[in-house]
Image 1: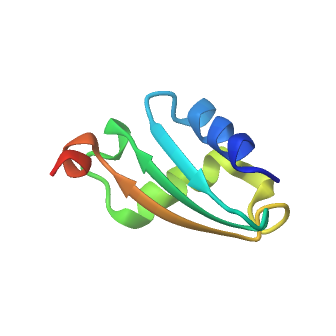
Image 2: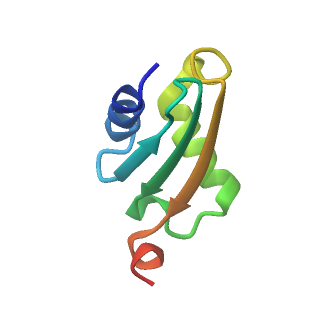
Length: 77
């Protein structure tokens, strides 16, 4: 698994999102996802939205994914 594949999958599921993924070992990844779709949602709901874009890869090809999920206003603040 590579960072660009993860970024593309998240963007497909959340087309308005800005996505940055890091994961030098190809197994453990960190992602910053900024999307207006997160407005009014609690962190757990935001994370579920991102996990849904990755489907069965979570727990398989993607062993661990640390998420930071922000709205555009939160990212600017």
